[in-house]
Every structure is written in structure tokens, then in C-alpha cells.
Length: 488
Image (cartoon, rainbow, N blue to C red; front, side, top):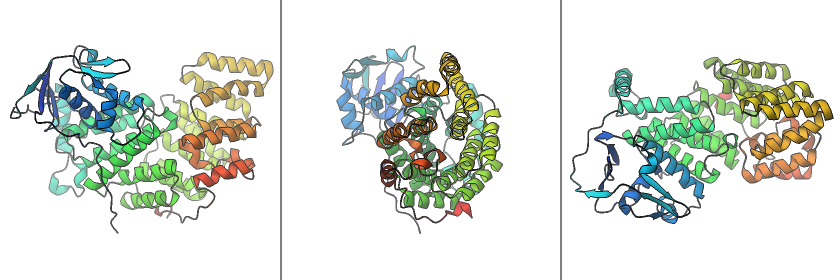
């Protein structure tokens, strides 16, 4: 049965005034055509960056207060100030071809922003500049990718083919960055997806990628560049926009399922969306990983391992897949296969911190504290905190492992990894502190709270009233789910 999806595009612009073309410095902004050019060459721009620039241009160099941005861009929504700051930073990067981005947009501390170059209104019938890629390399790549794209009559999925070849190239770049799963590459991916959509606003695959990007920006593991409510709202809007354009896009359905699982704790809804995604793309690695994670979180361990191993077979050199296999094996009580999977993830170049951290949690839980300390120090070294790792080693040698853990745990809590901090408190023999951390994770909707019932570290807490209350609020005490299609 087809699903009815209510669409509200995150790219809807505020109301357009009579004069719609503005010139400032080397730039010309056509607000009706949603086009920005610099010296006649198109600058890809879209989403909130375009809306912000439009408000600044309409103001004609006058100050636009922060409150005005909030009222016009997020009417009726509670949005933190740093959300606007993130989007202004994106806009400044897009204007970076200018001698200095600070020479285009001025920040008025505590008040708002204004355009510094004189703003001139042009007639609406100005001929729009031809779309031109930014440099000869991009032109070559755009032509090459265009020659590889199938013709419309060869393509059964309309949302997979952009109208402009460069949009395809931009979203491929964005996806490569998104796989790194770190803060700065994620922000750059956001920029590239929005550039692709500026070139082709109806490119469904790019909307689905944008949804995946906002979902990643909701993750506590990268310190949430946007507030959770804002990131999840934008992820929903982008996924729904992608589905409206092409309802066969598994990525968009997968994003909806992950949002429901990780942040709404709507297990039935997550199951339905992931089941639908698997029916659309049974060999898509990201969909397989999401389904495997769902199965693991709901205690269906054998099926989770099977699904995640399918993903590993399809993309054997992807670190994240190996890490998820390792975590699923650990939750199933299969310690040696878990350690082998983590070792495989760690062996992939270049060195990456997340696999060390996940293996450290397992090693501490099974009492192999010396090995866990080695992984802890390696994690700190990759994070640029070599001196902190050396300090922990010295403290462990001088005062014992527990003293080193008491020094370490505030570090984990400072980066808001509350479920992980709770696991470390359990390893240190401090269940009350573990429950404190889990309650913080619940309040902040930390990404990995979904695995509360299956993480071996927390099994000694299952009878504790405080733990049972947390489980009830996440909905993990009343799961009655069939296995999704992925397990078949």
C-alpha cells in the first residue's frame, strides 16, 4: 500500500518582494530563479544559506537582527542561536571566492548581520547568467559524469538522474565525506548537498543525501553541530521531500527509520520504515546496517549478525560495517568474533578513533583492563591528547586502574557520550554513577540509548527501579516486534 507523506520542503523561501534581483560587489542574486552568480558564473547555493542571503539583500545593507532571521526562517519553531550561526558560516564559505568573506557579511555582535558592499536593485527582466562550473577541472568532471549517466528512457528511478551533471558530481563528493562520520566532513557534506540542490532543486537523490547529513548532525558522537530538534526536523523534511520526488529511494526510508529508532524511540514506526527500505533495496549497505542495528537493539542477535555480515560482504573495506558487526557479536555474547571484527576495523587505514573506543568498552566489560587502557590511550592520541593518555598511564602505574578510571570518566562525560560513560562507570564498579549517566542520556536523547537493554554492561542493572523507569521511557520494556524483512 502506498504511504501518504505530508511534505513541507526545507527549501521553501520566505515571501518575495516586488524587486527580486540584487547586485552587491561581484554578486548578482535572483531570488525568483533562486540563482546567485559571481562575475557571471553561477555559485551553487540553496537551503537556509539562500534564504539568509535573500534577507540580507532585501535589507539593502541595513542590519538584519537575529530575531528577524528566526521569525522568517523558522516561524513558530524554537531554534537556538547557534543554528543561525552554523547557516551563516555555510553562507560565508559559499561566498569564499571573494577576497574575504568578512568583506561581504558583517557580524554585529549580539545583534545580527548586514551586507557590507552597496546593494543595488536590478530590474526583474535581467537575463540570468549561464550556468558555468567553477573551474576547468569541474567542467571536465561534469562532462565525464554526464556521459556516464543513463538516458531518461533507460532510467526507471526518476530521482536518480539530475538535470545538471555537476549536481551528480557534488553529491558523490558529499557522500564520500559523510562516510567519514566526523564533524567537519559532515558540515562540508551539507554544503555540497545544498550546492547540488541549488543546481537541481528536484534531484531526489541529493535530498535523500541531505536527509542523511542532517541525521548525522543529530548524532551525539560528533557533538551535534545543530541542536537535536533542529537536526531531526530538517532530516525529516529532506527525507519526505526525497520520497515525494521518488518514493522508491530506500535511503530516505532508512533515514526515517533511524530517526524513529534513535530519537523518537518509535519502534513500530522504525520497523515499518526499515522493512520498506529493505524491500526496495535489499543489497544497499546503509540500509542493511540500519536494519542490523535495529535487530541488535531489539535483542534479535543472530539475525542482526547475519544482516550485518551481508553488509560486510558487500563492502568489506568499510570500517563502520566492521564496527557494527563487532558490536552485534558482543551483544550476542560472542566475544572473540567481536574482537576480530574490531581488529579488522582498526587495521583499515588511516587510523580512526571510533573503533578503538568501541573495543575499549568491550574489553573493560570483560575485565581485560590492560588492553582497554591501551585502546583508551590510542583514542586519546588520535584525538590529539597524547599527554592525557600518558597521564592516565602514569596514574594507573602509581595509584591503580580505578584511580585512572576516575580521571578518565569526566573526559567521556564532557563530550556528552552518556551511554558510553555509563558503561565505563559499570566497569569501574559504580552503578549509581552509571544510572546518573543514563538519566542524562535519556534527557539529551543520546544516540546510543536505543541499545540500553542489550548492552552487556547494563545487565546487572535490569532489576533496578531507576533502570526500569529509563527502559519504560524508551519503550524497550514492551517491544513486541516481528523480525523485519532483512532477516529473511
